[in-house]
Length: 454
Image 1 (cartoon, rainbow, N blue to C red):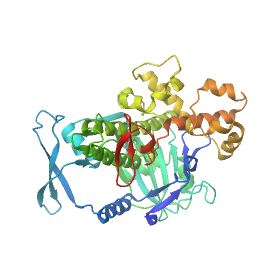
Image 2 (cartoon, helix red, strand yellow):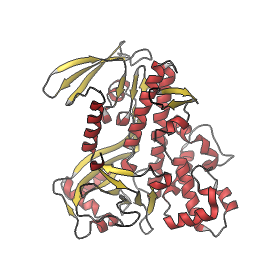
Image 3 (cartoon, rainbow, N blue to C red):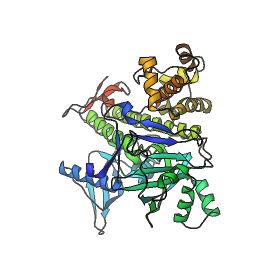
């Protein structure tokens, strides 16, 4: 797998032009929290081959056309009905049917269960984005040779109608893309040069940081441009009787922070744990479904709030947080503990409102306050444990009491750490053993995977 990867120590974000970029140092979360960028097709192939080597039966170039259920679904899928077979067709035209006891739907954005049978997918109008991207050669490495060397670069376009990414890849090429709301993209295509490639290249001119890294040596690989819809969505449920939905089939969050792999792996482990928990009688099947729904919902909601906070920081045109974009029960499960902090001790309502959502985003946008590694280390020496991620989230009034009014560096660093404490989405396997959901955690001991009382 290392041959597919290119290590990154963190990521740089330029959300406000005229200000210093914000840098996220992944190592703050621990030495095992650095990351890599991979070629998706190569990574998928590697994981598929690994699964086959572990005894999984793999069927390539084959798609599922129909799911059969134990009861009629003419009036919808009942709680008692469960999927029992799948009708398939392969590339050569051969058809067949396979039966099963349990179904894990990892069908990607096609989302067979969610779209065709449950019909419960909800798109986020405020994040109805599209991306155009291509590949470049000889692009300058960000701060090459320094501690931030090789970090991906993200920036808001001038005109704040979109953003751009620049991600170095392991073979010396660089992925560069632009993202904007579908309506904005349609308008710009109508007003600008014809053709996807010319539209893409013209929008990159609105990213001065990207242009600087391209410099005089960077060259576009002709014909490499592609376009994809990056619509964000979630669903009302991610499970049912003897089935679980995971990955993009369950939910998709804006690509700004590359959260797809985290949501996918979280869903995969949740599906395996809850299915085994149900099979072993550790919980009822209904309880197992509720655990999976909550785990996926909390994970995608936390990532969604990170994205919405970033767009608020950019003062982005076209992407607005609206209440319909957020599942209220998932929001409560993910953030109710912090309500007194971002909303005020005496201003807590029992239901999510647009005002509360706005307050939450205003609080967490501090995650993108530009601070330097030197500032962080100096503030750490002055305030000690207050900077620890394991410490409590502090209200601004509490910060004022313990900090010198003139210590702007400490306030900036601690406000950013505060936001990280709230938005931190620990999707590591270890979090399954420590973060209880509905009173249960996961037993990760080899051979004993399942759910146990917290």
